[in-house]
Length: 361
Image (cartoon, rainbow, N blue to C red):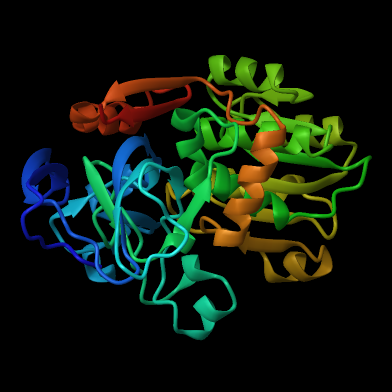
């Protein structure tokens, strides 16, 4: 994608120039789109926990080991932000289907478009990714450029600020939920972690007709929020006998656990409450190792599934679903774009009950 320009003037990107460093404003030339490229003015950008991990520069692998993100192809400086709603500013000569002035949700999980993974519609799993906010400049910026109009989705009747969450938070939960279907009427789904993703997961499950939802979180405030969204029960994982409590509440019928924390303790909890044939979907990236006896894995026929974001088609399905329901009505705090650094700080510290959205005014 183009990242150079001619004479369109300057714009600001809030960049991370070193891992564990500060996010600082840097001036750049506004890019001129070529070919099928589309330039958008950023309107809103969600602040995601993935941004925290990228700023830190690693994922915890357990046993004192870390996955170095610099060694995974993330090159500095990087402009974070992948949950973006923007307005089309200009288009390349071959960019059909995008018109100046349209406000769109951007699909950020862009692949090479040529490999077998991309050809089957799973660009989010491409081994040569060009994801916005990770491998290409993202939405902590006044402008963003994408390679093709196909990565743009109509907002329908959605609030544009909240709609930005659908590009990652909403998409990630939606894709994870699709991996546990079907869920029968008497079966339960346990949602571990009730931050922004967990809250969206509870709402999506309930709006999809799955009424037996149990939420797990250490925060009483978050437990109360998800009960208002339709969770039948909400428990503190620190409570004595929590496994027995969940088994009793589900009557042993826990079809699936959606783990939006993703550490060793939450994985162990999830695997301990699954019924035969149940599924643990690991989404959160707090890190560590999953340890589980192989004979039990086989005789209980449980599945351990990793779920990373979602596909372009899933995002478009989700936008249609959200347009029909009040899905993205979760606690949201809108802050100015120039507060990107403090927003990531607050999310990292666990001081955000819902989600932070940056606004470029």
